[in-house]
Length: 97
Image (cartoon, rainbow, N blue to C red; front, side):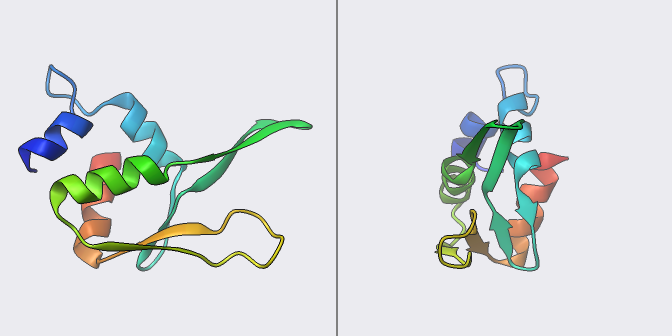
């Protein structure tokens, strides 16, 4: 892991930051994509969130290439994803734990 990535992912004690773990925990990992949109709350008090900034900043700090996209049907839910290589996907999964 590069130093620039360690500044984003690790705490001062060297543990993985819980905020990063939670963000990656909310993501859905597919074959070559990381779906970054998720919802929180319940009933009529729900809100939509995205972990895209966290995922992209980790990938950029590590030097991995990626592309952004959306495969949701028109007017549908969140289909935002980050398309990555297999090694980058495994790296994110390893951080998630």
